[in-house]
Amino acid sequence: MSILHKKTKEKEGLEALQAQPAEAQQAAGYADTLREILQQPATWQDTFDLLHSTVVQQRLAKALNQQPGHIVLTGSGSSMYIGECLAPLLQSGLGVPVQAIAAGTLLTHWRSVLPPGPGLLISLARSGDSPESGGVMSTLLAEAPAWRHLVITCNADGKLATHYRNDPRVTVLVLDERTNDRSLVMTSSFTNLLLGGSGLLQGTREELVANAITRAASGAQHIFDTQSDTVAALAQRDFTSVVYLGSGAAFGAAREGALKMLEMTGGQVITMAETFLGLRHGPMSFVHPSTLIVALLSTDPAVRRYECDVLRELSRKQLGMAKLVIGDDVPDDVLGANDVLVTPSTSMSGTEIPTVLAGIVTMQLLAFFRCLQLGGKPDTPSEGVLTRVVEDFAIHGATP
Image (cartoon, rainbow, N blue to C red; front, side, top):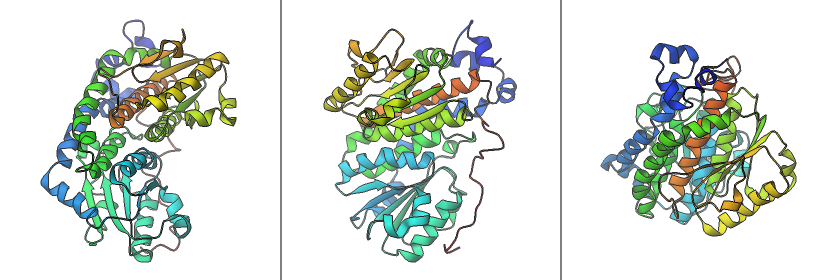
């Protein structure tokens, strides 16, 4: 029986887990992940301060010095999903085409998927040591010289931060070392890399960065303090699959939520991520009586009307075990008796970054608690299968 399950009769959620001695947390395999989830509000402020330092502002200005005709965000796994969150925000704020392309796809098919240069490639990485990340950088510096590069990483000692920084086409931004998560799964590294990428919006939509950080941190802390028990209780329900729904920037967050649950449960919980309207087609067949539905609602009233209609359709068809709805100003008829609503402390209307971050931390908690409920260790799930940095593999045709 897991530690979480033992404690639920006394107190569900974070308080019981934090009350355990450090040695017990390490033995139970959740010390790093719990610390890294909970440190996020504080690290977001650190990242905000870093983005507004003179040195970093100069580096970001250098990356955008010559208006790029196209911006591509790249990474692998969670880092790729950060790019999917950022792409619509950057395109809207900078007024240039922005897309996210997985590092693996660039490594094998860059000639057919990379837009014609000149452009700016933004590499997002926790460690910066994944073989495909270095392979992409080496290949494009040699074969696509018109492209400039911005590396945003959590690891000052990683290959992306050290090997290429002397090339005049490469700008490197290293976040605070606390964001370089020790746990296998990315949590604070994900959200801080997301904020790091949003630093490119300085001078275009300043309120999106400046005013959003305090609200985002306050909203996340409110979820930790007042709603984590509810999420913990939901994680104990008898679901075998989860579908994650998001629109726009939140779709990248939904993809990350699906990956967190899959990783932390070692594949015991099957997951799928979709857009709300995309679910209405074939993917709705994924929703069974044992399926939990996680819905990240948009702050855009027009978009939210579509999203709520889909949730009503699921209720009308009696699909799914329950819904976890993340957002504010949710119509009463969207929620059923078995559903759970998680809201930040203040309205997030009109601001996407705080809304996306609130959804991400909630989904992190859900996966964390579910892992413990199933007897797993969040710090090292899928031991022997997954590693914190993907194992080296041969890079064919790339410049060393």
